[in-house]
Length: 349
Image 1 (cartoon, rainbow, N blue to C red):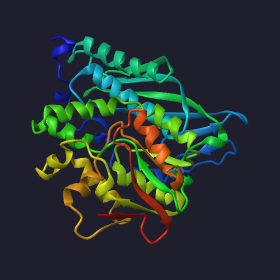
Image 2 (image 1 turned 90 degrees about the vertical axis):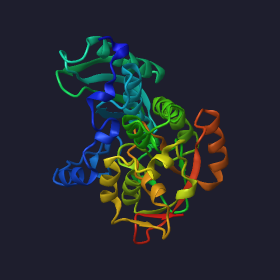
Image 3 (image 1 turned 90 degrees about the horizontal axis):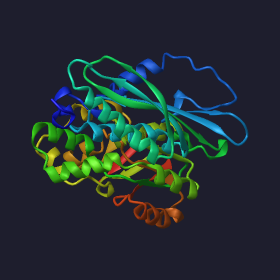
Image 4 (image 1 turned 30 degrees about the vertical axis):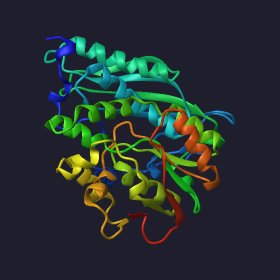
């Protein structure tokens, strides 16, 4: 069997960021960990940020992150590109620039042709080079199902770090990529997704957030994240809690991938959606009469999703224009921040 004929989706039940540990369970574990204070540790695990940030000197801070998961698509090289783009995104969510990356691989040496692994690694290498970084090594173990990702190192100016805890009332909220990748991957696995819709989802997941990070910095953004396995509402809730504000999100403005809403209406709802709902439901107030399928799309476990950030309202038109010119065609204004008002998030119709 060749790499071209092997379908990686046949190896998994949950692929991509849908395979993440349930956020509520993870939070239980993390709260038991003591975090030593250090004057140069600018961002740690306490605010559920995308990466850790350590100040080296007055001009440079180190960004460190790691991300890996089982296959999210059938084609090995495409999987490598998506997994790499997803890992690199954590550096961009912090407003940083990628320096180096290291491969993290779990691969069953006797059950899948080694040519498949070569294609996965080639796809990852392509994205690291596109990011302007260097691949400097990695680590591989024999494992089933296959898994791939990166440990990534980046840099950012210590005073230009974009983190979860930087929101304040009166900001506009922008999302750069449409939601629905988890739904479309599940639809592909069950034969319900239209081929054209699924291909667009794959293209979206391969798109780097590099330009988005540069635009955030140019627009003086102080708080942002990327939307991955915990869904828009899970990551937004973490930002709201870290910043001690409430986020108002207008569901009708949130961009969705073509076909995602229809699949949800047909009952194609990834299990991770319900884990994400369990995580947020006590802190999110949903508007009466909100369409159920749309509500669940706000909980879709994204893989290599877009950036989500707060920005001064007067900068919104220019930021959206720049984002769309940079290839984020679905970038949209989706809400606002207000003083803390009992809930972390208010979802409006």
